[in-house]
Image 1: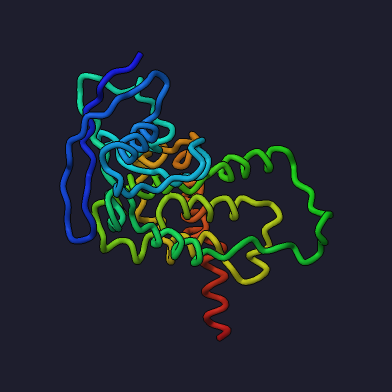
Image 2 (image 1 turned 90 degrees about the vertical axis):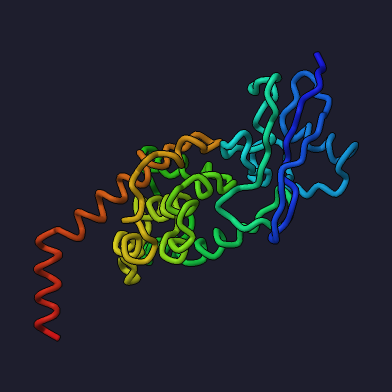
Length: 255
């Protein structure tokens, strides 16, 4: 059943902008992205919006809908009150390029800072063996589509621009946790201490586990419970382990 929806869409660029009101037809079964496309076709041909798959798998159409970070292609109009205007704005944590498109290059810069998986020296490709439990743990984190909604909603990034230099954000701390949990990752043998770098270089201590990242994840990854909290626990264990402390003192004296 069709109806006329009121949309308030943010229009502007890096220099500024404002919400613009539109009235757009909505058909049964449609998602917000369908309506945005209709708006482009009928009233706002120059509206900038980023999208690709329209199936909730590419992470491109991230925005804020009625103040909540969401994927436009996964937000059904039937979930929203037809009596109220639908307010669509760009992700607030990242600089606006134009209209609903933001500059998310911050995230790719953070991704490059994390050392990749280190293959075990004594195993060749095809010889890797893992338990199903380890596979299942890593598979949850691999579901991430890099929509960056978790990065956008994290108040450490969202409300404090000055933190961006020191804080990787939940998506990339989850990546560190995934690698640190990997039973075949030989980072330690290569001189990489993932727990220490998570704390010292990627800002793990900034996270205060409010679970806002988990709440907006479209893949329902338990980012806080299954990645960030366990990583914090292991980082603290390492930092305050008396054997680690004693070993560092011995090495210091030997130097």
